[in-house]
Length: 74
Image 1 (cartoon, rainbow, N blue to C red):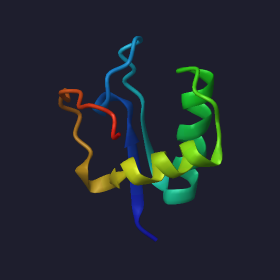
Image 2: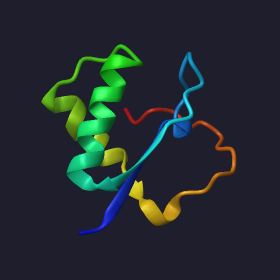
Image 3: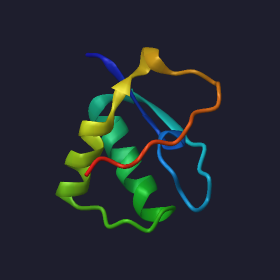
């Protein structure tokens, strides 16, 4: 199975979150949903988990370099 990444630096946040989560797809979605709820105040719903799934990147795309935040997908 392909390792995937959720990188909070990719999107703007009030806290300037720098968390990056890398692992198997289901692990990353679960951890990212829990993080979004506990840190960013989002509700952990099936719809949010699907949105997270659509925003995942391949783990190979990881870079420690600073990222310019992009708008959240509509």
